[in-house]
Amino acid sequence: MKLETFDDFRSYFFDFYTSIKKGHEKTKMRDHLGHGLDHDLTVAMLAVFIAKNRTLAKKAWCAAMLHSVDRTVKENDVLHTMKEHSKHLSHAFSKEEINEIIEAALRHSERNKDNQSDVQITVMDADRLANLQSAVIIRSGQYRYMSPVFNFSYLSGKANPSSTYENPETVIDGLRIVVRNYIPQLRLPKAKKLGKIYASRLSMYIKSIEEDYELIGLKNIIP
Image (cartoon, rainbow, N blue to C red; front, side, top):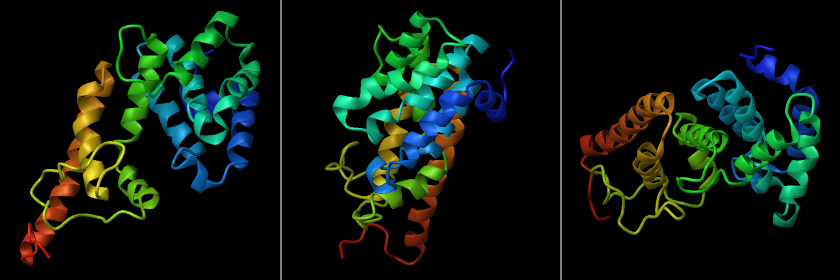
């Protein structure tokens, strides 16, 4: 069966999709920290877009739909929950293929390694792309609402040296670090091409903020 649109995938994997959607509906937004159904759908359709072939696209779509389970249930329940959702995939995949899908979801947050399947690589690239889209600007502010938007002393294109991926000092540093870290990690040809477009947009947005404060004499000051 040829699957291309979101409606195609939802219809073909309807029970699987419904099971995951219900799981999300039980989770409060503040608990999943940006890993709601909207994020899963974004990663899933990006996976379809960048996948090497249609068979891989189907597997990666399913793995992407599972990849936020680790944010919506307790750690000890993650594997069990993924298996319960995946019971609805038996019409489309063999037991071995379902295990491959689950493993890709479980391992999606790893750094690049040589022992990762094509399904996992596709989901990892799609997840990184989702976090390079323009919407990440809003999401970053929404989920880092306790952090300053920027530091006046670091408005020249570089992040505060104290900022890390896990703990950026400011929201804008988080965006800078995402662009810096994710682009070199993309592996699939379509992902690399799309990543450059997304990164360019984010970089232009960051630059526009720097220019706004340069215009009024507040760039790189020490307040």
